[in-house]
Every structure is written in structure tokens, then in C-alpha cells.
Image (cartoon, rainbow, N blue to C red; front, side, top):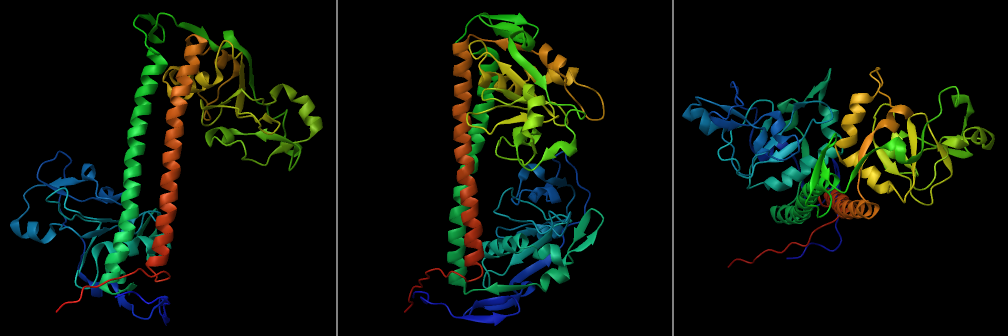
Length: 438
């Protein structure tokens, strides 16, 4: 049997839903709604695994974040043991995390239900566990649980009685099943993409550790103040090979009253940390730019964060808008025939060589800061130029792959959110077929 081509809707206390759907209270489709076992937990792995709030922090059962309990009676073991399809609900948490859910799929086995998470055991004759999980996720995304939670300092809570009264839309079971299949298919694609991201990040980490200290195809190494490096490499101070190292203007050079909403752009730490040169709306006049022209940003420069979040770098790409650096940045301009900018960026961001020197040398004031003299004294390993380019290109290739994977994940998440919104409210109906029984 096919679903109707055009759905008719009816008005209900939770809004318009398809005519053949019901509105029910959450407790009416559950076999169990309760808190967990109150027992002293240990982290030594002694006894039975038991859930904690942290167990579902990422909205999945995380076996590495369970507690353990000893001397559990057979009665409590039977009462508090989780079964596949059980849903855990975070009802005591910060307001940001209130209403997080996870479904138990049988691992670890056994797993006991602990305090501070509610157990929702669906009645499978009325509601599919995965359908209910998706619906609860949609409610959380819409802020419904924040609205019904009681707020306290740094914490919120939802009374299980109030949760049980929550009204939900209930499609026929065959439609619930189909909705679940569609959403789980997208979720599985997200999980596969997460796995690919994790593997690629491990690959990048291994490549960084090897390439930035061992180089490419070297067999002979020497000991230096920076550790073992290939014999062909040198250790140099940044100030010896940089054409220019310039920190941003002091407050007296760039007063707030001199900033405008148009003119010459002022690049800030945000551009570096978010790796986006289009961000920002701070400008100075052309007249002020003439006074601060030594701080002009040019393609190939490395911008380094020197206050607050210290020691993050980015190479300025071609085609950026004309501008200068703000107080919280420094410009490092190098001769690309000696030091490849992208290699220097990698040494700063992806190795331990520069960060430990920065941490040892930076200002110890309340707001840490780097100064031009400190930057000039930073030491780095210097391979031949051709090898610098190879190292930078290998790592950039891995980064491009990571970026594509992350974009794919974001797209899948958008698709999932859209499907949840449409399918769980009946805005879009799924094609349902049923077998005819004799």
C-alpha cells in the first residue's frame, strides 16, 4: 500500500500533523521511565560497568566513559540492566547539554543504568526505539527541553513526571520504521565519514612528526639543540634568515578613535585563528595607512598571533584585500629562495619545535605576549629549499583531503537535520508498503 500522494493535516496541541498520525504523551509509549541505580562507583574496572553522565556526552554510548560497581544483587542486576533499544536521557546537566540522548545497542554487555540519566524503554508495539530517539533529538534541537527544564546556577533539570507528560506525534508503525531506515542510512554515512576523518588525522599526525624532524628519505642524522635532524639540515635563528619581523602597532599608534567602517583593512587575530581573510570590518583611513605602511600585509607573509592565543601562524594568500596588522599580530616576511613560507607555517603550527621555545620565552604577564626580539631568536631546522617545498606540499595534500571530508560531513549533517524536520513532523511522507497476509 502506498502513502497518499497529498497529505491531509489536522490541528493538534503540538501543531499540524498528518490526519492518520496520533498525538500521545511520552509515558504512554514507554514501558519504563525512571532514574538509575544509586551505588558507589569506581574507575578501576572492578565489577559491572554502569552509566554516568559522561557516558553519553557525545550522544552515543561510550564504553570508555563508564563507571563500575561491585556487589550488585541479582535483583538489581535484573532491574537496572540495559537492553538493546533502551534510550538514555540526560535530565540533570548544564542547560547546553540538557536533553542529550543515546540508544543502547548491546555494547558493553552487560551495562547497568546509573544515576543522573533517565532510562526510556520504548514499547515496541507502539513506537520504534530509533524513531523515538530521532524525535527526542529533534525536540532538543528545537529547544523544547531547555524550555521545560528547571534552571539553577550552572545546572538545569527535567522532572521525569514532566518529561512523561510531553506530547509527541505518533505515525503508524510501518511509517516509523521507514523514517528510521532513512535517517539511519544518513547517520551511517556520517559515521563512515567520521572514521575516514579520524584515519586521515592519524596519518597527518604521523607525517608531521616524521617529516618535520626526520625529513624525506634521510639515513644519516645529527644531534642538535632541537633534537636529532638530518645531517644535511641546518639549525638557524628566524631573525638570521627573515627579511622582516614586525609586530603590530601599539595602542598609541592605533587608537580606537582612528578606526573607521571603510578604508584600509586591519587584519586581526581572528583572521589567523579562523584561517579566513574575509572576516572583519575594522578599517583605517588612507592617511593613517601612510603612517603604518611598514605593517602592511602582503601575499607570502606569515602572520603570527602574539597576544592572548600566542603562536598560531598562517601564510597570507594571493588576492587578499590591502591592509595592515592589528596589535595582536606580527608579520614575518621571508626570502622564498631560502625559507619557504608554507614550511615555516608548518614548523610553527604542526611541530613542537617552535611552541616549546615560545612557551619558554613569552611574557609571563596575565595576558601572554610575544615581542619582535623573541620571534627573531626562535630556532628552527632548515632543510634544503626543495625539501621544504615537498614537506609543505605533502602536508597540504592531507589537509585538503581532511577539508573535503569535513565538508562532506557538514553536508550530511545538513541533510539529516532537514530530513528530521520534514519526516518527523509529516511535512514529507515516506512511501510505505505492507505485505498482504492471507
